[in-house]
Image (cartoon, rainbow over all chains, first blue to last red):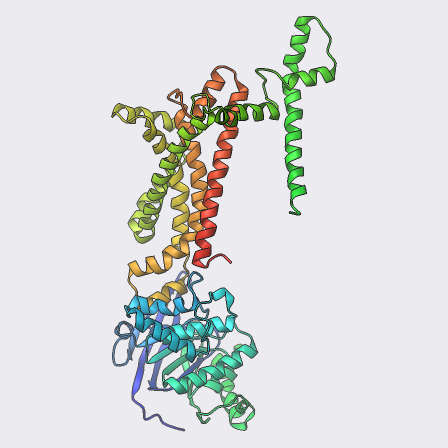
Length: 264
Length: 291
């Protein structure tokens, strides 16, 4: 177990979040505590309704917890957002169809008031990072789903946020494209040294990508296991056939089953 | 090109039904004439007679076509395009009111939609009135608008344009509200992660997302504008405009004149809608929204 010696960038203490719905209160998060160190790649895995997306949205200040404390870079999530601490990648690429790929990546830069020359330079740089150089002038419909999602990652990287929050970014893509993007994402993480929070419901994806795997369970949404990955930082795709990988995947699966109780 | 045959077939069927209806509806007059003259006529003679009456119940297509040509193309050729007997003159009178009313209605409609989308109060207070406004028959309202405006000294183009605007603002409001609200929750969340202001959200997301909706409602709006302008010409007993042609036609039993004015109105409406369709194609293409 490698205890992280890096400074903590995201700290959650006894988080609670209850949604009031027409069917009564829904306990989305209950007593969730977690520290995420700088430069970590943390996956949140669990069945639907376990609160993994809600947790990520709380970090981004898109939801307000009803109890507990959370800090991002030592600030509240709202303050962190205003200081451009994180980039957020959604399940769908959500590119504007009326903007080119370059125009889409420029969107946050325009909103945040970067000057024109800086914008152009940044677009060029992040397109290189996600291997989409040469696609700047294309419209989204001219790109495949995987390429669109890469463009949306580039958009989240454009303004130099230290934290990247990703909500099932590859969930809608097929297995082969997903493998490729996972490999690319690891390379990108190694190059940029970002802290990444990654929601998924794929066990292989979580194990392959993460330095830390957070297993969550539903009703009420809570953390049932936190696993520090023993895998080396260098991870070729065939590491997934190694005994360590398989053992780790087993532990995650056991954690998921336990959290599910007798429902499965 | 391979659609030409089916399209022509449909037109031929419609014209065929029209001719049959003209024979059927004008037959009584033809038989009455024959009886008065004390002669027996065969069906063929009757049918031929129904094609060339001066005041038919239902004019035959070629009679309407001839009248249209006589009052447009032929007058242009003889250099009297803007004479008071020319449909081009009357069409322009109606068209100018239509365009002014459409401009007022569209601007008002877009402005109201922006307000409704951004203000809960406006949504709750303005929208019900906008809907209620369209439940009043325009035929009942038009004379009142004209009388009220006339009493404060406003005559001519503007009262008709107001009626046009009254009919055309509504589809624009409804379409634009839908369009401005079309970005989904994820799109709004994305802007929130950038801490974007409401104004930035409007100019960068809501407005461009609403464009396809806007053009659809503008097409409905401009057709409604034309109807408004024509209706606005009726209650004053106007002497100029397509509505006036229909009105005088009905005073003097000139059905051919009514039908040619109707067709002139339909042609103008089709051209206006096609023009907006063209602007739509060019705009959406430049925005990258059309392939």
